[in-house]
Amino acid sequence: MTYAVKEAFLTLQGEGMQAGSRAVFLRFAGCNLWSGREADRATAQCRFCDTDFVGTDGAGGGKFDSADALAAEVEALWGDGREGRLVVVTGGEPMLQLDEALVDALHGRGFRIAAESNGTLPAVAGLDWLCVSPKAGTDVVQRSGDELKLVWPQAGIDPAELEGWDFGHFLVQPMDCTEREAALEAAIALAMERPKWRLTLQAHKVVGLP
Image 1 (cartoon, rainbow, N blue to C red):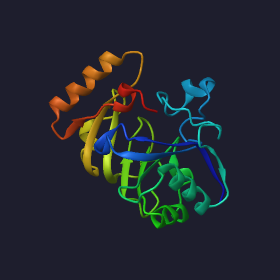
Image 2: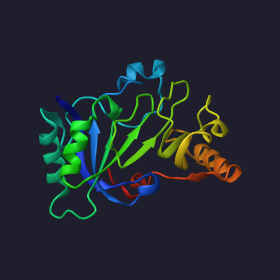
Image 3: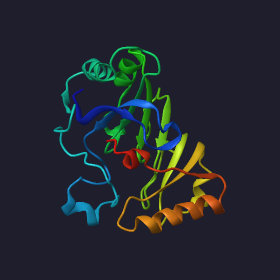
Image 4: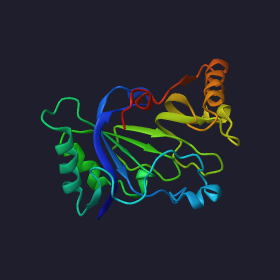
């Protein structure tokens, strides 16, 4: 299988329960909810994405013709030392490309694998951490994992219904939009009203990391 990677880089995880952790971010190209073209945003199933996942022209991006070649690139980005190795596989939608061969290759190089998905495709087996971020109006089939991250506010999603899904942590994240203050207030209000939810912020944007 050939893997199309938009970008890959070493940084600190900025979101969720693993925020602050050193990690290689592996961002696959492509998504099943939006083409990534601004001309298509208004008619997309997900209209608020803040990420460029089109093409393979980002730093560390490209096409990799085998799982081992891509795992070797991730290892090179991490550098020396095997302690605490973490790769965050994201997109776009990583489940379009992430497969058992790549999971095995990354595990073989000592990496814990965290994936961030919209949940509309089943997660590949063998992940060490799974974060699902549901989008209103989509058919979420992956209703179990480690972390449910709800970008808020979203019309058409009932947080009370999501609380019945099988996740270890329920996080609410303010939508990165033109009405940022209102989104922050709404996310805080949700966490205050429903204590199962915990507020998470995009700390990497606050401190200027990619």
